[in-house]
Length: 163
Image (tube, rainbow, N blue to C red; front, side):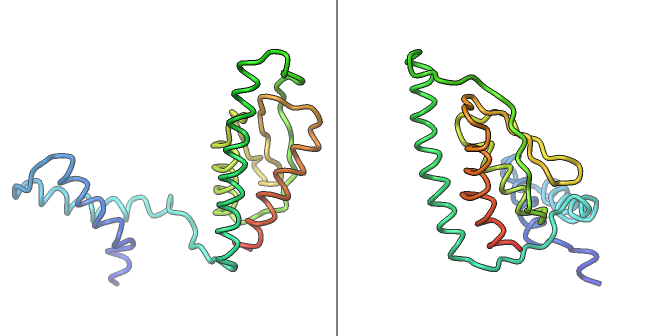
């Protein structure tokens, strides 16, 4: 019964506090409106909440975070080189189709975030059946190299974590 009324207690508290912070007021009206928003919005938006996450290998998260940090730093340097030094521009931009084995919706969302925050990639789209990631990259020589990079450095650890 309580779960139906309060499906996401932390979200409710966060919405309530955020409402008060945004309005810079703790008047009775704002307290009431914040409480209503905190109670009603999680119920109305229940269908948009992600599936519960079950993490299988927590240490892999640290390894993946380190990998993403290193790859992002290297990619930053490569993009700067690409933009500033024309003689280093070896290849042009391209769209690359990356076949996916990953199926967990939360893991797919993390993969999309990783590839989108990496400099040199500007756009990603997941196919409707979630079997293919379409990625636009600033400089693509051999698409298979990019595919192997995404699959080994990001998809495989995400599969260990989520599946």
